[in-house]
Length: 434
Image 1: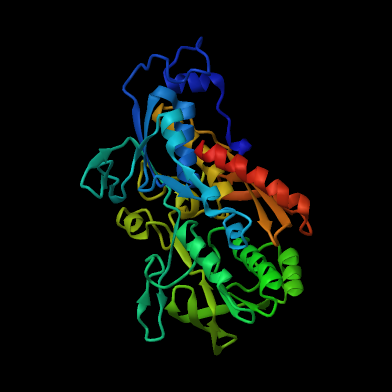
Image 2: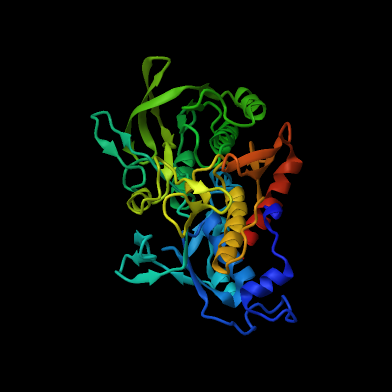
């Protein structure tokens, strides 16, 4: 998980932590700090934010005070959440507490939302009016959804849990709701899902979901149908594996689809009207799973702070510092580089960012050639999965990440990859949150 990004040597750690060179790495908090600790605030507690907070303290020790601002007490992982749909996992198995960050690494956790980011004044304001000062700010709010329209042209906000749009794309309750809707289907019912245009969180995720749902239905509701409406010109990733399973399961797949309107009759049911090849068609669904187009998380907050250019936040890829507001770093789904948006690579980005922030705070040179990596397992049935990985290096001429290893897919799905998937996830969860 991003081992290329971890370059911190013993002398550098001791310098950051304010500990004498003769001290041991096993006791980062017991050394004598030579100056007041630097203040770093991390906004957002997903894979990016949690990893950044952890590694800032792990590497920076007593030289930094780290505050994680996240309203929730625990994180509901979207990774592996499609296995809740087929009953192979329980929702509680994907709930990860923040308590390890506070108890093991002494990260302060403020359970509130940020309402204002003042880059010039280097403060953030919380929903209760409290203002916190920072020396460096890391923003990791994940992604949010773009508005949809109903048939009358009225705007629907899919970020609103009462909108009737069942996306189940952020983990937690909506995944439970989609599982309940799936179980409630009668034999012969229709499941319709939409796939947003790239970029969106977890490129293989929608195709994985379609396979998992179709596999469950053929075993439990064999006369039911799965229809996939994809905004992209073709299957975005692992086309051979997903395409083969679509054929095997009888999934009706349509590409180059544009959503015109959505008419939810209740959360998880209704119809969607789309354009396909210049023609308008309406698909009625007994279970309607609309995954809307996506943009940076906390979009209004980031926009008001001057961090966005369009849907995403432009950054210096080497450090993830904003190109528009100094002293603020944006990592994870919201940052605007070319790398995919997913939990594993967010963990990798966070380590590059944490090292850069510590170097900047301590007036040390920033590493000029960081590397990050992406990896993902995708279940396609109750017992089989595929595997995909790619490595990226910082390119100074492009101020972006370029592939240094061609995306390596595992080939046809296997049971071996299915069981390896749980070890991969366990390591990723632990490295990010524990």
